[in-house]
Length: 294
Image (cartoon, rainbow, N blue to C red; front, side, top):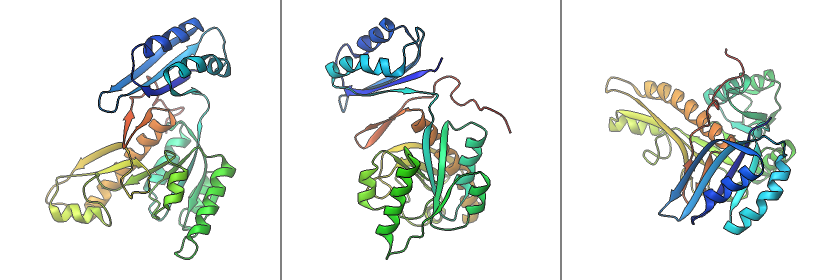
């Protein structure tokens, strides 16, 4: 029996939780996990509910029945089968720590996605990708061919049926048109604890300012560079005795962990867009379990 996940976002009003619970109960569904948030500032309500259809109703039958409830409350909603893994396309340039981390987590079953390929503007990691039995797409990007390169990228996205694109240290700026077309479907890792130290070489900026914490930020990509809604962040402590190179090495570990957590949250439908911010619910029990260790 697959666990299904209901996600709902709508204007806050009385009776939403009661209506959802009543519908699931009347259709023989047992709620196993639920998280909700009522944003007093935006007036938006968010809920993510995991449940088991114990009487054998299919996801399609439940979607058909829930449509009336959704219409009454003006919901943006979805019912998702947790056994159906999200298809993810990775993109990388010449820094491979995030790519290798995601591939490893995927290989041991710790990342609940299906990686459908890797796109790169360099050939640096072609062998690594091919050794994982994944398609490798080399799309060279120059000032002259940027539009053509993005058209090629969109073709790869469509043909692979990728639902999410992950920029695993992909060092090219995407066009406004592409960002708008794939809004909420591209995650980037920024090697800084945003909103501080933006732009080129943030670790050097942090070093020059003598910071005691460095970090990384995973966010959705928008037309505003490094200004997209933040999904996940973390930091690590440094001291006056460490060099810029130490900052980079320590930062790599944080980047990989932060990006993996952001992808995990998105793939499990735990992230909701809330204007320029996000609502990120905690993982359900057992969500981080790996299929195998090592």
